[in-house]
Length: 147
Image (tube, rainbow, N blue to C red; front, side, top):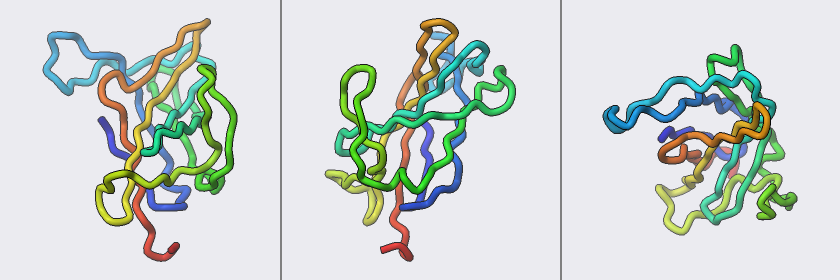
């Protein structure tokens, strides 16, 4: 599980992840498998499940060589809005903005935590979701200067 920290309404730092295939069953817990080769993939998505259960879906970009297995997402001002979105392929609703949703049990004053995963489509109809173990975490901290 990785933790990415972002301040409320900020658009940097850019989220950048390297995808790993599952480790061998006989490897020690927490061992990363080989880097996932993105050759032939055609679509990369960031899925965020907010602490209130709402889902956000964003298009990601492939970075560098396919063999590097690296994706990135650059946050934009619209990520912080509360506009309604559409529906995902499974028919569940998702929102366009709305990154901050109040947690039932805050981690600390002014801090919320959401889960993230990354979806790779292709080649063909292949669909793979990462990470393979625990989901990554997006932790959003309050910004003193942005009330």
